[in-house]
Image: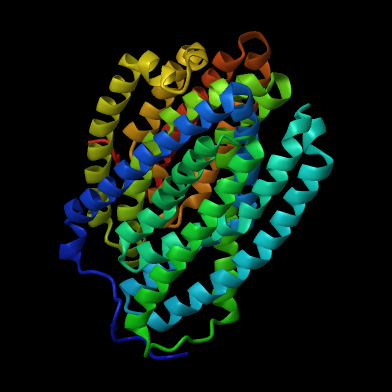
Length: 443
C-alpha cells in the first residue's frame, strides 16, 4: 500500500467550502435548465415526427434499453462516486485512481452481457411480449446504446467526485438531448423519420456524448499525471463489489417504480397509449433534472462528510438543498398544471388527451422534489439498505396498482399508480433519514 497520509492534488475541499453550495448549485442548475429545454425540444420533435403510435414504439424501445443499461451499469457508477469522493476527502489519490480503474473493468463486463441479452430479447421475444411486431428493429438498433449509457453515467460520476460537477452534469444530461434534437431535426428535414432511425439517432448521440465525457476525464487526469495507481486489496475489492451490487438492486427497484407504467401500457394497451402517456411522463419528469443537479452538487459532499463523521455539516447541507428544491418544485409544477393544455398540444393535437395523466404525474413529481435529495443522502452515508427497503414497498405497490388500474382507466390508471408509488418511496425515505441520521431534512 502507498502511504496516503498526506493530502495531494485533487484532495477534497475544506469544511469552509462545504458550507457554500451556491456557486456549484447555480452552475449545475444552469446546465440542467439547458438540458431540460433540449430534452423538451427533442421530445416535441419525436412526437411530431413519429405521431402517437410511432412515438409509442420508440418510447417502448428506449424503456427497454434503459432497463438493460441499469443492469449493465451494475451499480458501479454510484459505488465509484462514493468511494472516490471518500478517498479524495482524505487525500488518497492513488486509491481513488485504483477505484476508477476497477469500476471500468466491471462496467465493461456487465454491459457486454446486458447488451447481448437485450439483443436476444429484441429479436426473439419483444414483438410477442408487447404485441408490437414493428418493435423488433428499433429495439435491436437501440440496444447498441447499452454500453455508451453506462460509460456516460460512470464518466459523469467520476467528474463529480473530482470536483468537476458542471462537467459531469453536462455529460450526464445535456449532450444526449442536444444530439437527439439535431439528429431528429435532420431526419424531419429530409422526410425519412421513423422509430428505427430515431433509435439510430439515440445510439449516435449517446456514443458521441461518451467520447466527449472520456476526453473531459482525461483532461482532469492530466493534473494527476504523477500520481501512481495502487493495487486494491482483496478486502477493498470485496467492499466495492458489495456496494455496487447493493446500488444495482436499488437502481433496478427504481426502474420498477419508474418504468412499470410504460411496460404495462405496452402489454395491456397499445403503442398509441404508450405514446400519449410517454409525452406526459417525459415532460413532468423534466423536474428530475433539477433533482439530478442538486444530487450532483451534494452527493460528493454527502459522501465526504459521512466519511469524516461531520453530522452537523451533513444536516446543514441536506436542509439547504431540500429548501431550494421544495421552493423550485412548487413553482415548476404549479406552472405545468396551469398550462398543461398548450404544453401538450405543442407535441400535436392528439396529445391533449393526456391532460389527466399529466396533472397526476405532476403531483407525483412535486412530492419527489419537495422531499429533497433524501435517497442520495442515505446512499452516500452508507445506509443504502434502508432506501432499498422503501423502494421494495414502492415497487410492489407500483406493479399491483398498474395491473389493477390500467385495464379500466388506461393512461390515467398508469399515472395514478406511478404517482402513488413515488409518494410511498420518498416519504418512506424521508422517515428513514430521521431514524438513521437523527434529523429531518424538512426544516
